[in-house]
Length: 396
Image 1: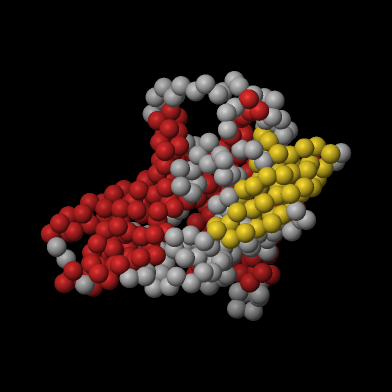
Image 2: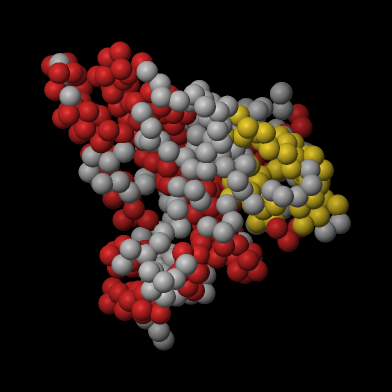
């Protein structure tokens, strides 16, 4: 019986990869493909699917060796939805064929993914979605509208949930699909945000045919599959690894140190409080990642995402106030469709405006408060009168 690799094995395998494919003379895509094939993409994934069946904690060993050799990365900010949401969902619920087809180009960054979940009439109550998927032979025909879709203008593939049975309660009539964004009937329109750019999109689906072979999980059990996506999404947003004074708090701390003429006693006290809270959140994120080594992400990720949104908004507000009239300036209102999501880039005005979306994307703060209350604290669930009512009979 073979044993799981240890740190020495991971280090040896990484050095062998670097020797066989020197980063200085190997193209980035070729190097990333070789890294995936060597099992050093996600070391905790199964062998043959980018991993080595190793403990998740050993990923840091491979990453350190690769960083020291200046090896190329796969641009996680550009393919974050694929890495943080689609991949773990495919791994948990996909067929062997789906795993072999999608995981390698996803991780390498050859195929960008987006998430077709939210709808205009089913925002916080995602399970009330109305996009329909009707079986037609070996295909499903999908009609509906999705909204707030990051990277839809770049994506080749989408993770999609649609209603396949309107005659049962809303959570039981949903199925989960992989949608080809290049198929006829898929229309992507930009949504210009308060920042001036169109990072999000709305997506219209008209008679889109999806083969049943691209369904994830059983028919009618899409909500169970979607929960895997949502839990991983909240961890990837709120639990991302950052160094001390990374993220929003780093920007305002730099301004404080470099601009002593802006300081006041009140602002100092507020900055100290937020610095401590940001550090607590960072350390809590480290603890959450350690828990992930032993299992799947749980509702604790919702708490991290809650803290992420609140801190970003409070810290960016403090930064604008610290800068005084300079904080009211805005560098660029140009309408563009960016390739990456950047919470902390550009200027203070951008950070302040962009952070307003943090309490909406990845689950609204109100919904996440319910999850923390019920699944972490064990408080009674809120009364609901729609759990046993067929979706078609719900008021809309």
